[in-house]
Length: 226
Ligand SMILES: CC(=O)N[C@H](C=O)[C@@H](O)[C@H](O)[C@H](O)COP(=O)(O)O
Image 1: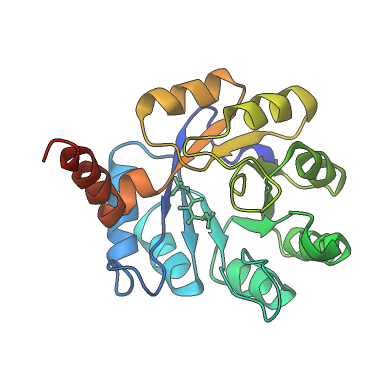
Image 2 (image 1 turned 120 degrees about the horizontal axis):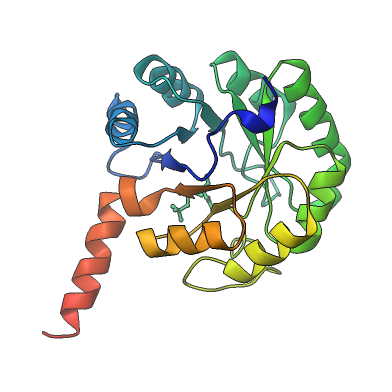
């Protein structure tokens, strides 16, 4: 199967992630989140860490995008930075490896070998980028999907509260690699707008799987009336 056919067109991918400091971290919570998402029609899951990848692969029968978030000494790169993580993600059963393909610290040469490694191990690669230029570079590097994941999370990318539709639109018009919309999508209307911009699929995380952030939005809204 061509990697690009992994996900049915225009479907929802749910990101099920809870970092160590988050209340839902640990146990099989993310696997249950994934089951709930798939039960309701999600066509893929995105998740962080070997354990959650393993448990989610056991729990659901849809492709999984795996990543490992890691702080690097002296570096701001945090999504799957080294070969060890790529290997661990594929070994745990992920179908797609999500990689940081931002242009920070001139590490694109290193990224090239991460992509080659994932492909040799039989996995697809999703490039998490933050600008149009990074998307164009990612395409040249031979990735299978490009995600707008990191827009707003590098100091030089557009900083905004909502999804970066402008980047999405420009990227979809410019590259041939399928573009996945990801980052700060909170409503079904925004998800539909992402498809209208040309995205092949939409990743929604916090709005579905981070109850502390969902609660915070309600509390903030109600406070205005207190
Ligand atoms: C920037 C970063 O670390 N993004 C992470 C990437 O995997 C996740 O924390 C996000 O939840 C995911 O991208 C989905 O986005 P949102 O939760 O906004 O729907």
